[in-house]
Picture 1 (spheres, rainbow, N blue to C red):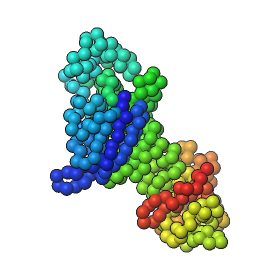
Picture 2 (cartoon, rainbow, N blue to C red):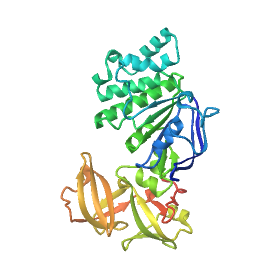
Picture 3 (cartoon, rainbow, N blue to C red):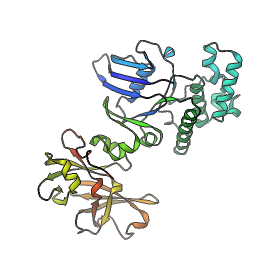
Picture 4 (spheres, rainbow, N blue to C red):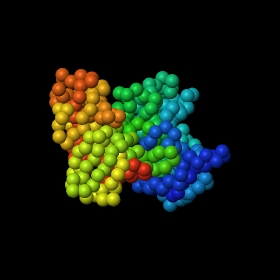
Length: 375
């Protein structure tokens, strides 16, 4: 396996549209890196440049110690797993698995041994004599994964490989892929992985680190816990987490009693946070995760009151939608802790957990509260 480096990588199309804006990214040897972001953020374009399926119009891509910008895909030491599996329809599974090794003219005994090992790892031994049309979606995806694994490439590239599967099978395959990655690491065969998805659940549950992208820019690269607890900006804060973080325009007033005001309602700012917000007085963006709001009676002190617009029963949790003025908020409440008499149109108060509040610059979106402890 090898380290992967992107240095000031750009992609400009013939119509002068700039899809990727000089991004820098380091993927360590054996790391599972996830590229995530909304449609059109250039995550797949970035992956295709790494693979050699798109030309690089600026910067360099390094795999190990080699610059691979001008190498064809077959010379880059990569293996790619696609969304549509891309199996050869006329070949049985065992031939699909071994085809890459046959192209490299590997000895027959090595091919047979590698095919047996990979089919055992992925539990597809009983499928070896089937054609792709005889496979379920999950089986076909395991074969596609095996075809990549058998090549023992420098870097594995995954382009939304689970998006065609149903929810239950996606969850199962997430576990299978991450378990395989951990197993290879424990066996001394660490696999360097770059995995593209638009699904933040996949990103948060699979990645050692996650690269969040927007409009061809990298917004933040961090482990899942850091992304959730210390988002670098309001975009990451709103993209990571379900339900997404509540973001609302507020006015920050510093002084003897630092305060935040939303829709004419004011709460005090915790002193440890206020100390880090010097010079930030004025209009800001307040961020509070739904899990960090408690529901109180309407006139509770230190809370914002509003009207319930919807109640979503999710099983063990309830998503309570509350409008505070013109600002929609969501609070996540444990089912056994919510007043079952609450109805749409009722008024309640939402009290934020003071140490979990985020404050973002209203113009740049930068998280200006990052310097204080979120513990």
